[in-house]
Length: 187
Image (spheres, rainbow, N blue to C red):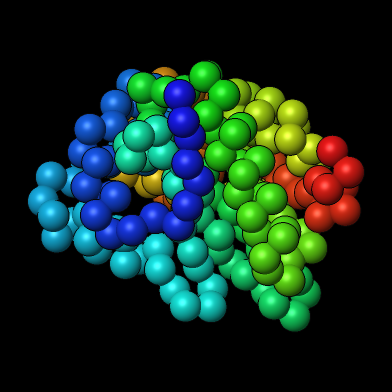
């Protein structure tokens, strides 16, 4: 099995149509609802900003197992945030951890970034475990709007202990996690 890490190309995103679907409503926002090429193109171009956003993928024989986005780059403070998604058909197989390791090695060796952060919902224990395995530490806990507001009623009904409404906005607890280049390079 040969894995390849590289910057994603526009034609790569069309394979997302073959991705599995999350059945847990807490993760519905990671399901790709697109069916038309124009929709996939729009998604791809939304992830490409010259100085502030980049998207990379982990591929198995040209099939994208997952992607990772470098965003909120602050060149002055030498910080950035990452966002990651893995094909639900390949969860819990270590591909997310491998993707993040390759990504951090790539970024820390090629960009003037010293600190990488990420946000993870407190309920997402599988992702937290992967991030901690790599060396990320929780630096802050906050209660804030959930990124997907479209499934508000379902989430409030099914998970009342995890979600609440604040002024009509669905909210939950997030962790901000961080890793410094020097700590990652020592590992």
